[in-house]
Image (cartoon, rainbow, N blue to C red; front, side, top):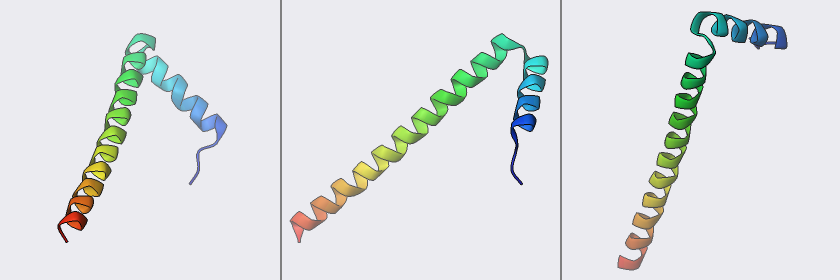
Length: 60
């Protein structure tokens, strides 16, 4: 099931009516920060795995 343009516009309008512009902006900011932090953690985890693999290769 895919959302079309009309459905997305309707959802945005309902969100604005329910939460108001100021509160919605705060929610968007918090969501963006959460996504950014999540991506950074994924990158850090990948870097740690590569470092561990490199150390294991040096020991062998």
